[in-house]
Length: 246
Image 1 (spheres, rainbow, N blue to C red):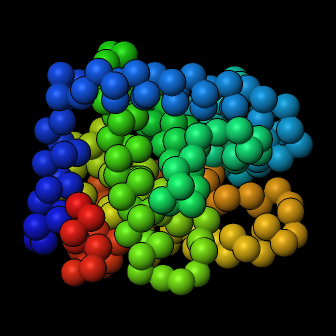
Image 2 (cartoon, rainbow, N blue to C red):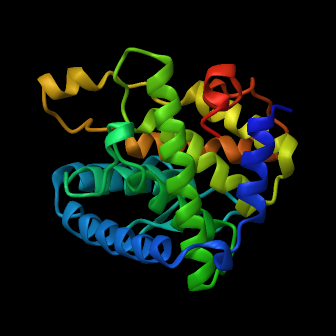
């Protein structure tokens, strides 16, 4: 295991609410409110409606799973489907928070993935525990985005590195341990949507920033790793160039 993965594992599995500075908690609360407001507005868009209908129809919860509710909808589908639709819903309105160094957005994938996983896994975190998970998502997502931008000259969508973020959160909620976490991260990076953002900028459509697909891939990666599916080490974390960022 690389030193970077060791540090990430400790941060992911050991961080507690009491470890968070008050300023970080306040910012997390602010981001959460912003994301929910943006999701409420995004739910009124055709893009969100299409994504929610798609998830309810084609990504339903399978036998033996509870699934999750679609954001501002009420219908249930799989956690994978709820993550996809939720990310597209928030992404539909360009009002959500962003970070200059990642040239994109973290929370739009983290929030729907967290809500879907919590429902599907029947986890009942306290408010403090939920904020801790949200903070972890922002920290991991920001570092993953910086690492990816440093490793390639192409401008990829937020979904390309948010897949890593959501896989990590899934690993924590599933209590996978370091070995399966490593595979979850590797699966998520490999399958993450490296969407060519400049094409969307030149030709605006509903594809947006790929956040829904990143959330869906990350949640899927955690479930696959849980079942024993393996993936190559994530270069965003374990490469020599990226290691210093962790």
